[in-house]
Length: 166
Image (cartoon, rainbow, N blue to C red; front, side, top):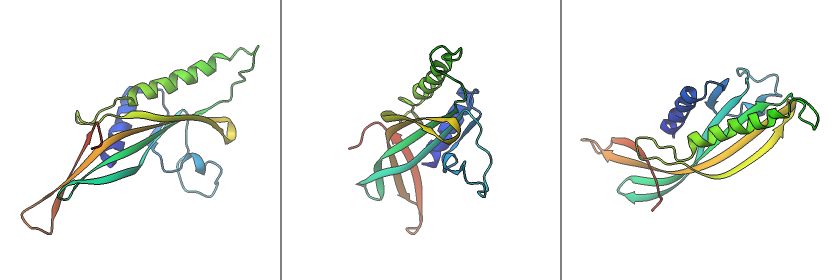
C-alpha cells in the first residue's frame, strides 16, 4: 500500500499546486484540538490520503489479490460568509471545483498501467474551527506476489494493482 500512497502524494504534488498540504492521513485533522500533540501544523487547503484497508484472498502459491480502499480527504478552512446577499457565495463553487479536481485525478487512476481506482463513496461534513471536509473513497485491486529466492526461507515481494477482483 505504501507504493500506492507514495504515487498518489506525488501525483497531487505535481498536479495541484494550490494545495498547501498533501500527506498520508495519520489523523492530523483529529489532532487539531490536541494542544499537547507533537505534530506539524495542518495548513489549508489540505489533502490527506489513506489506504488502510485491504481484503485479501489467495490466488496461487504465496501470492494474494486484494481489494484496497483508498480514502482522500480534501480539507478546506471556510471562513467566508456564504449566506444569500453576501459577496462571497462564489467560495462554494471554488470549493466544489477543488473537490472535482481531486476526483478527476483519482477516478480511474492507474499505477504501472495496472491500477484503476473507482469511487465507491463520498461524504461532506464540517469540523471544528470552520473546516469543511470533502471525503471520497475509492477501491482498486492490488496483487502481492511472493516469489521464492534461491533459499526457501527468503521471499521477494512484488506488488501490482489491477482492475477486478477474481
